[in-house]
Length: 221
Image 1 (cartoon, helix red, strand yellow):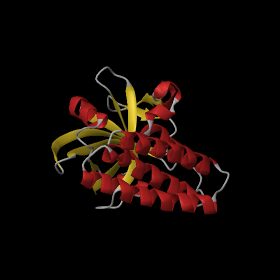
Image 2 (image 1 turned 180 degrees about the horizontal axis):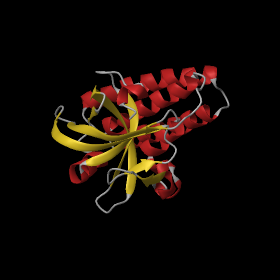
Image 3 (image 1 turned 90 degrees about the vertical axis):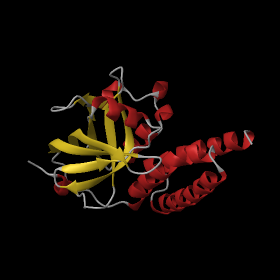
C-alpha cells in the first residue's frame, strides 16, 4: 500500500492539505489544514478548537486528508462564501472507501483516517492522532513548478487567520498585520510570474476579501 512518505510528507514538517469531514447532520465539508506525520502510517491533525473541523472530528472520529496542489480547491474550501450559495457543492465530494467521511473528487491523493487519540496542542488548538486506513493516489503526470501556483496557496493559508485576528486583541491584530505582509509578498510573486492568470484572479478576489474584513474591523472600533 502507498504510505504517507510516498506522498512527500516529511517527519516534523507541516504538509498543507485539505481535511474533509461530515457535519453532525451528515453534510460534507472541508477546510485547508496543515498536518504532521509521526511515521509512514500515522499523522497529526491540529485544528483550532473553534473550527467546524474540530467539532466534526470530535463527533465522528474520522476524516479524509486530501492532497492537492490546486490553489482553487484551497480557496473555495477556505472561504465557503466564495462558492455559489455560500457553501461547498456536494459535487465536490464522494464517499470514502474505508471511513465514514467524504473525500474530494479531484484531489491528487487521499488519506482516509481514523482518530485514535485526542489531546491538546496548545490553548487554541487540539491534536488528533490519526491512523491511515487507506492511502490512494492518482497516476498524474509530473507538473512543472510554478511559483505563482504555490504563492497563491501560501497566501490563502495565511489569509485563513487574518479575519479572526482582526477581530481579536491588540496582539492578535498585530499578528494579522504580519500575515498581511506575507500575503503581499505572495501577491508580488504572482504579479511578476503569472499576470493575467487564474492565480492572479484568485489573488485579486482574496485581496478584495481581505480589504472588506479590514473595513469591517475598523468600523467596529
